[in-house]
Length: 161
Image (tube, rainbow, N blue to C red):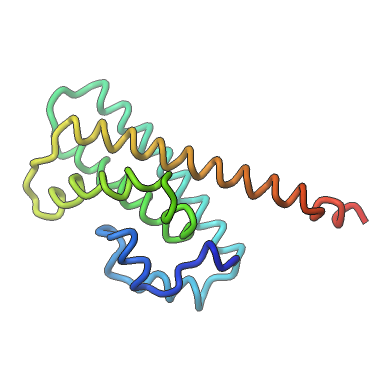
């Protein structure tokens, strides 16, 4: 995996992402030691797919509910989990501005879920929705940028030989 995508160590990941959903396992070490590039890409895109699905679920929940409930909070925690997993495989994205709002906004949802008290408001979930959409847009832009780099740098011509 290109080094700009990988975390140097688990501590670096913990410092930047402040994960709540996945902090009990030494994920960075596991993907350094056990993952090949294809497996890391598979898990990255799986997390992105799950994150998009959770965002759709939150949209549906927001349309049908005026007050926060356990289901809304569970969807918020699900979004946080998949976002953290995505950032596990995308160091460059986590360090960029596209992830900034998500990394700071997810805390209000996660802290309440883990303390089993609900100070999270509907407004917090709407903000999480907006922050997550921004994160996914930044991911899509980075993906497009990488594809353009590969095309412009001649990798496409090599495949034609």
